[in-house]
Amino acid sequence: MSEEIDIQALQLGDVHAFEMLVVTYEKKVLNMCWHLLHNREEAEDATQDVFIAIYQSKHLFKGESQLYTWVHRITMNKCLEYIRRSKRKKRFGINIPIDETFLNAENSTQLDPEQVLIEKERAKAFYTAVQQLSDKQRIAYSLHHFEDISYKEISESMNLSLSAIESLIFRAKQQLIKQLKDPILQNWI
Amino acid sequence: MKNHRTIQPIEVSASLHDRLMKSPVYAQKIKTRTLTISILTTLLILINLFYFMANQENITEDQILESQYANFGSDLSI
View: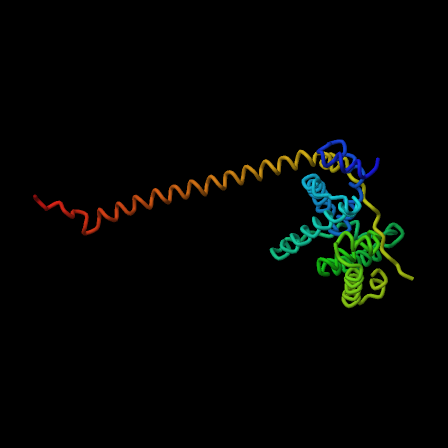
């Protein structure tokens, strides 16, 4: 099914076309939200909001960019809203925890409990440092680092120039290097 | 060598998939709710405005009746 036909039908309010869009992008959007928000519950709520926003603004898609770029952009904007909301909540003492999956080591079954704990603390320090980056730095860095999205795609999604994205990611890395003194953590950056 | 931490992608649960499929319904509900709230807000503002205006008239009338001019002309005879 071509993207054009899909979006044309979608813009006419065709439910089947929308369902196809959900099936195509749900996993990608969920994982993007998850990598940006570090919390599954938040990521699921954000994913739901993304698809509602896609449905509400389907008529605004002009076809000037790829469909996935448009979906990325809506996802990023929703995640930005969630990041800002969580920062506001933090000010009132409500802390949204980092998901355990992010904190557990990949090979945790081979490690002794003490090492697992150390690894968990390292991961917590790493993701907390990522969360402390500025909103744009956090998004650009996370998309490139966790989602493996190219600078060009990030620049299209964030509506910024390529050099601006390079600069954002460079400054994010510098900030993380400054914050994380542990050499193992510096290897993760 | 860089030791990037890789996080395994998560799968979309059946309940989330159902919720996503119902997005058009939710979008419609949000639209209806927003419209209802807008109408109610406008109505409330209008009711308040009319109440305020009606009350303003009563206050002015009451104020005149309580003032020194309340009985103006009552003792005049032709």
